[in-house]
Image 1 (cartoon, rainbow, N blue to C red):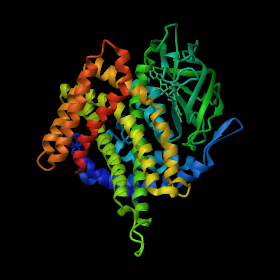
Image 2 (tube, rainbow, N blue to C red):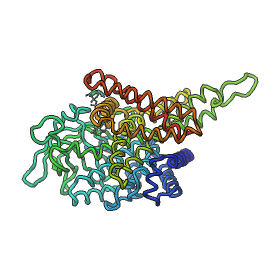
Image 3 (cartoon, helix red, strand yellow):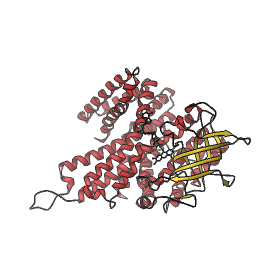
Image 4 (cartoon, rainbow, N blue to C red):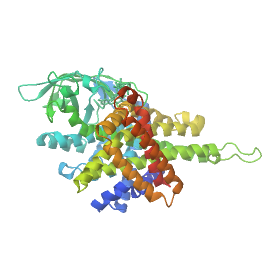
Length: 521
Ligand SMILES: Cc1cc2nc3c(=O)[nH]c(=O)nc-3n(C[C@H](O)[C@H](O)[C@H](O)COP(=O)(O)OP(=O)(O)OC[C@H]3O[C@@H](n4cnc5c(N)ncnc54)[C@H](O)[C@@H]3O)c2cc1C
């Protein structure tokens, strides 16, 4: 419990130092510090009692196919139901749709606690929650009302159903087709792969938010979005589980190959605008991926710190050995892993708060700026949140020596579970391409300009109390701006620029890191 509680308290403290959140609080004064602290502590308690007991057991048990259906680890169905019933799933969904209407920032503040509790079970919650937002935005009102109600109750779940054997990063090569039947519904034919919780025993109905090809147009312009349930009118709906993958981690999350053979579904939004509509879901899931990584980084950092106090090695031979935490090299490693964790937390909170402001601010120009800033930050939050999960677990294992490499300690599971996070929801390479070609080139650096303004404000505010960190931030910003100028000038030579896209995004993150570090001083 202690680690979860400490994580909740750290989050509450960091929120107070987050300018974006201060601006949200000015608009929503009900969310004062006491209320926020109470919500975070409640989330920590839920994660400890309901989720954490499932984590190691589900890693060992994994998922199986029995009589053509997926069986998830023991306890998942009950925990999922309790998570939904307690209202966590609909935390930030508007009250008009049956949610609690809390700011996204608070959802993003609580989520790493749940991810730390049991990241594989949370895969089902993540896609179901994002689907609620998608349906609220694009589905016909009656369909939205029925599905959101059932999803929030935990009775039904939803997937994000994009990938196919020949369409991974290259979504435009999707082959699954949809054709409209005489009853107005659409018939789906094809194979989808890698679908998380594509089948399971947590709930009685699964809705797939699925991209399929309608008409002859090639590429993403020919894709439309559908809601395809596994059961229709009380009967099966032409969907079969062909296989579940044997993976390095996330063993409790079934990753399914699904066959669609005339499955019927509803069109969501406009024909030919499927990928555009699905971005309602994808954006939220990218932020969630950052929170997954942060949850596991928080867990591994705590384990390493506690272990380093207990484990005794070294020091003069005629005296009792010292806790390894006292050795300068171990202190350095602990400091690095803690810093990476807390910088990531600060960046996630700031980004989520700006996403709230993009919706809440009374001023249209301000809303537009916050949208640009959020779009600038999201590829980094997704990528470096995911990396924090793996890197911090890796560093924690190094601090722990051989013990960390065994299954007696949770760090090796966190390392395995986090590895995929830079792969799904858009690989690091794809995020970097977005960051360069859309955020810098297409948007003409609008998000970057807002970022620069906000970072300069942060530096100015910190310069009196922590001058060294403020000048380090100034220097990191200057390096990033120089690289941005260089790559802006390289638009005419995309091959050369794309070769450096990931370096460019890492350079931006170095600036974000230096900015966020000012809050940790
Ligand atoms: C555990 C797990 C769960 C998943 N859950 C889901 C899910 O629920 N729903 C779903 O739809 N999918 C899911 N996926 C699939 C996931 O989204 C894809 O794996 C991911 O999009 C990458 O596709 P790929 O694996 O085919 O890699 P590829 O697209 O083959 O990419 C391989 C490498 O090539 C690079 N690359 C590819 N194209 C380009 C390019 N144009 N320019 C530069 N570099 C490029 C990539 O960055 C990557 O490094 C899941 C995957 C896993 C492993």
